[in-house]
Length: 270
Image (cartoon, rainbow, N blue to C red; front, side, top):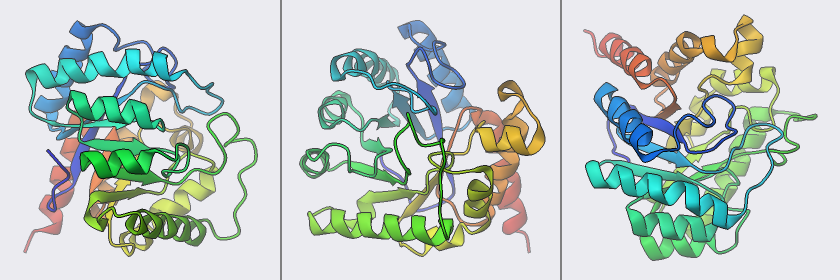
């Protein structure tokens, strides 16, 4: 139940939080979690990403106890019904450890494996795949005034260094996934530059994940409310497929699956 080496995969977002920017509070009860996961799998998701701590701009941290109480029942519910790859969206090593014990196989760490020094030991002990994401600042401060000289190269260099560090700790490169962190300490123009130059992140030699779904840069660019960004998200998804992105982390799985299928049909046409 790991990321494969073929066509672009869809990571369906399951936020079991009261305050996530798009779907906070929607998926808390086991019944609603099971129904949403079923919908995402039927639509084409091959990974479910479970998050118990909001990372929206300005979000406050939650305790380890609270995060565990949110994510572990959700992971158990998914695993009870489905043999699908499960990712846990956390920066806490113990949350990751417990999630792996419940059936997760991917650790999605928005801190780039920097927040908790024990996270690397969890990765090694469990054999988990790990997403290394770039973020300037923290969720609470990241959008106050993000500044780069060359955002694409600076982010690529950061990810390359983090991959090399993880390898030096004993993690195999094929276990690592890189994410430039759309919306995490970036302006609209920074995000657009990242998406224009996705090939730079492919050069790192790891799977590449992009999490652009419903984010503010889409709303700002098009003047769309958060409830009306799925079409634009699908358009960006098609661009990502064209650039060889391996994983798309999205809310609307069905629309993204259509974007992927159409793009791949065009790319493989004679």
